[in-house]
Length: 310
Image (cartoon, rainbow, N blue to C red; front, top):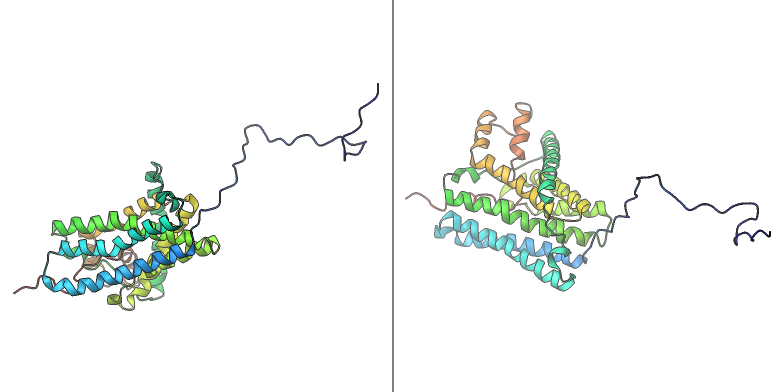
């Protein structure tokens, strides 16, 4: 009997390697798909539109504040003028550069699991925020609070409903759409993931700068930049913004409860100097964590009384 010749490219005295195998029950996950990206122009346009609309809404407010309309009207106008153009840009830019599925192009594909991921992301973000607020206060960096006047009109139910809708519904939807949806994906097209995540977070913090707060904007922007980075990490890992929208809504909603219920005022009564870490470090940090990451949460008259007596 004649033995068959060995396979090609195999030495006659050596048998070929057996086929690869894995231990029973072990399954290797498929490679992670690359994170979807958008052209840089989409992100640049989103930032420009948001900044112009926010500044423009404040100019309009200054022009109409003396009409003495109900406060709820000013809140509604700020929301429409400040966020409406960004929604329009998302619609246009996804028509111009997207695939035809506007929600999918920015990672807005809601799932029931978002209700589980959202609270986890919120808890992680609170931890990040407390850590950064502690550092900011310890270094004596000027830090303003963007909710100082909200509690003053808590008894006005119409105002309370309007500001809660703006902070808990409009801000999470639009800001996640802009920063974690459009801006981060556009940055990912030109830079590495860590830079893109940090970059969109810093832009998120800077978007909340208000000249009225002066140098206090420095600390506030740092704290909210950390919030933006935390949300960005989650959006990048999950490749969706539904979970961060839920986390964003919880974040703002908890702060609204603290403000409108008077908890913050009672905290300040026990800690009259919230910036003095030597007297009450825990209260200082917790009080400064009570910031809302949307630009129009502050009282719309901005230090002026739209309903002066007499």
